[in-house]
Image (cartoon, rainbow, N blue to C red; front, side, top):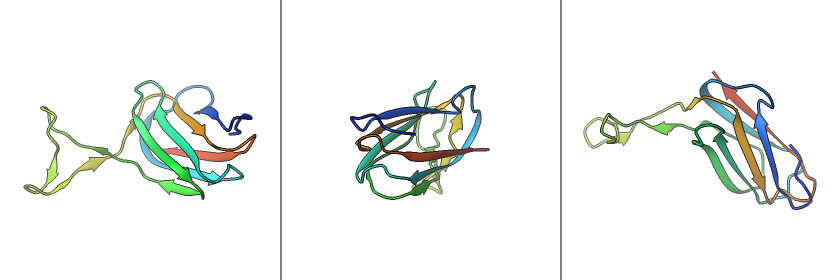
Length: 115
C-alpha cells in the first residue's frame, strides 16, 4: 500500500471479496514507509482489533490471539489463578489496514495469513 501526501493510507485484504478463517499471522514488510509509522488493523465487519502498533521502524511479524472467556464473561485461566488462555481470532470479512505517519507517498506491504 502507498500513502498519500499526508502520510495516510487505508487498504483492504483481500481487495475484493471476503476472507474467512482463523488468523494465523500478520506480516509487515517495510519498503520505504517513514520511521515511526503507525497502523491499526481490524476486521472490517466486526471491528475487532487484530493488531495496532505505533512508531514502527522495521519489518515485523505478529501472531495475534484473543483472550478466551466463559459464558459469563470471566477470563479462562490455565490452572486455578494461572495464566490467561488465548485463541486464534476468527476473521469474517475483509481485513482493514489504516496507516498514519507513513511519510509522503511511501510504501509498505502487509500479508495476512488465514487458515
